[in-house]
Length: 237
Image (tube, rainbow, N blue to C red):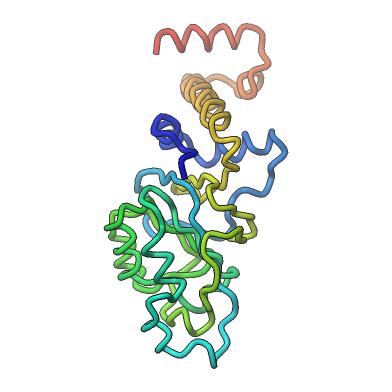
């Protein structure tokens, strides 16, 4: 997991998922926003990191008694102990929040290990406690039952689905108050640079709108002279 430089990560921390979605749409990638996943607590700093994945399948009762957690090789526990610092644990829970994907003890362990964040298309138990932790966390909704009720942890760091998005290990995950975007690793420098330019123009456009400017010809910038005005604005700011 060496694809994400500090410089690029710092850029992405300042970019919204909305801008990323628009740029990826221009590139023909229309299904990179993880559906029906929200932050447990809004207002945290933007989450950025490489994807480290965990895949659940439907639990079968004879294979998932509570005693399986005694096994030191249980995939859920192994994933928590092996997700690299700076990475984001992304869990394929089959969009099923009827049982928890994880709870506060596991998420606290991830935080203490330096993991950047956690995302599931299912739900978390202990959601109040997780929301208070200093680690971004995203899920569908709270869920009290243990994951063994419906989920069997099976594969670690393989391609998964999460909220109808294909997530490959090493993809770049960006999460803010709007939700979570998945960026193919090979596009990350391009996305960071172009979205930085987009956000700069949007700051200019918002300033113009606040001054009473019509959006026609401003956004997108089709009016004569508007690009020159933007370039002068950049020099001043």
